[in-house]
Length: 85
Image 1 (cartoon, helix red, strand yellow):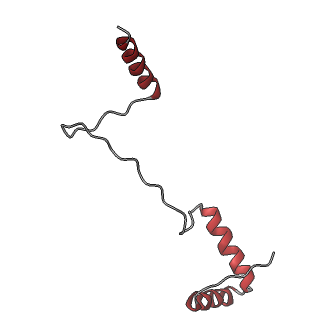
Image 2 (cartoon, helix red, strand yellow; image 1 turned 90 degrees about the horizontal axis):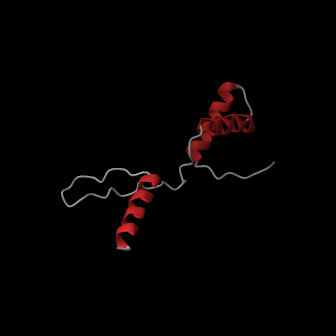
Image 3 (tube, helix red, strand yellow; image 1 turned 45 degrees about the horizontal axis):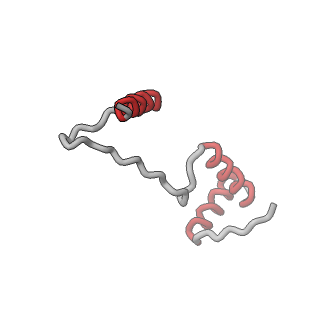
């Protein structure tokens, strides 16, 4: 498949020099480098970064303990039981 790349001049020169040192065509070294990058599993530089969820603290400054879904359901059930009285 054909495609067009817009590379900075300095990057293109480095790429071309590296291809010459390895005795490869430009397209061959590009394929090798792209495949190596994909195999490494590194996210693309432009990929959006996910932010961490905020840590909610009590008024005392201590963090709330992590609760499982099962424990949250128990607490909700207990509150519903008390609300009906």
